[in-house]
Amino acid sequence: MVAALYSNPNWDDEANDRSGRIKELNAHFNEAIELIYHPERDKTTDIDWSNPFWQASQRSLQRTREKFGLANRDITVQDVIDAESEEVQKLQDLERRADLRRQVDQLVISN
Image 1 (tube, helix red, strand yellow):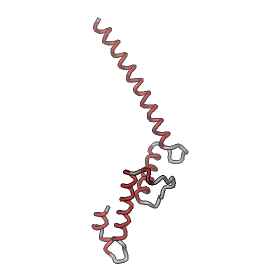
Image 2: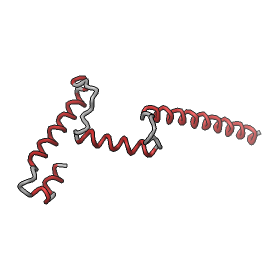
Image 3: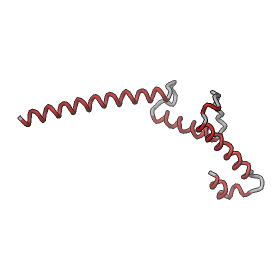
Image 4: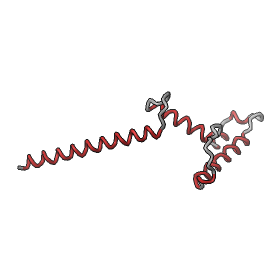
């Protein structure tokens, strides 16, 4: 993103604050790194959606919700994960049953 700020000629104008944007981006990046290494440092439950990192996350979550048809429903991402794990369990059960059938078929063929 810093390279994009330097290479974009729209930021060459004196009215645009390229250095301020780079400093702001760097501050948010450093904060994100601190939270990764020390998540207990900040236990706030309110997310600052004006932070560019959180805005990107919010867009990604919205696209995911739309992909699974949850955009206008009151279903959490955890509900989707749980539903997928149930589907995986069903598929694994079906695969086990198919393996058992194959084993039975091999016993019948070998006799």
